[in-house]
Image (cartoon, rainbow, N blue to C red; front, side, top):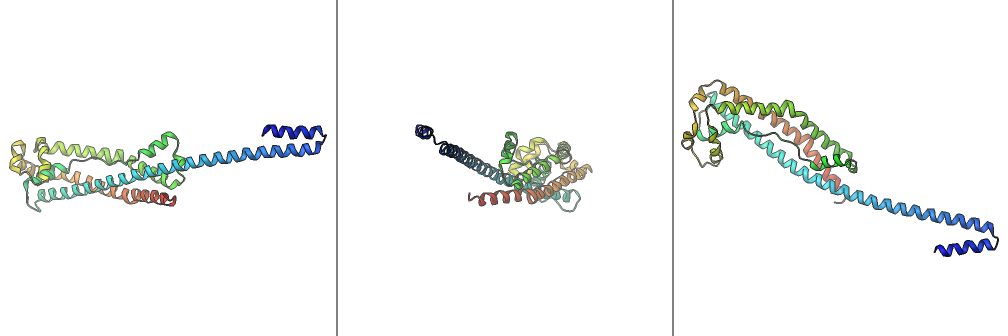
Amino acid sequence: MLKFFRQIRQKLLENGNIRKYFWYALGEILLVMIGILMALQINNWNEGRKEYHKEIKYLERLLNEAERDSASLQNSIELVEYKVEQAERVLSVLNNQTEISDSAKFVRDIFLIGRGGSYHPYFPTYNEMISTGELNIIQNDAITDQISRYINRVQSWESFVYEDGEQRRSAYMQFIHHYFSALIMDHIWEVERGEVELSRMKPLGINLEDYFNDPSSVYHAEVVGALNQELTRLYNQNMNIYTIPILELLRDELNSRGE
């Protein structure tokens, strides 16, 4: 092809047709430029397709993690709500409002209201995108903004909620171990399933009488009960303000792409 063009240029020069040669050369330059622009356009289109598919993969991963996070948060909500109920049952007995209907389950409640952990969002893909500088690949800024606010909100709790909560739980567990042996914990889940009675746990170390007579028992139960009430409120806020909207944003975005 290049040989063909050279022959045309040479023939025009040999014939002394400078004007035609000029227009031909100009046309050849324009043809080359058009070819370059088309090549760039095709390359940009290919790169755009690659970016598009990469974005879809990230969105799918974020959706999977958001669904997992939502399920985990829901489990945490149900757990702390149950612990609130347990604390209410314990306090009702300690305040002489009700009597113990099942001693083994009463001891179970005493142990479990002081146990548990703090919930943390699960979005490793978001953290990966930040570390690799690919966060901007998500075109819908509302998605990344919502995830960012969610993670920052929970991180802001670390000192005044989570650390304080761990201190309250630790103080509670230290207190009840004055009257209940830690060995009982091995049988707590059997109590949950109704497979063990108090008489089987008593030899391990249970002193209900002194526990009832200690005025601090009410205080410590109220403290962890209040902690679980606060976590219930915060976790439900997270679900309604952040987790559910994140799921909706991701699902709507993928649906709009036909995925």
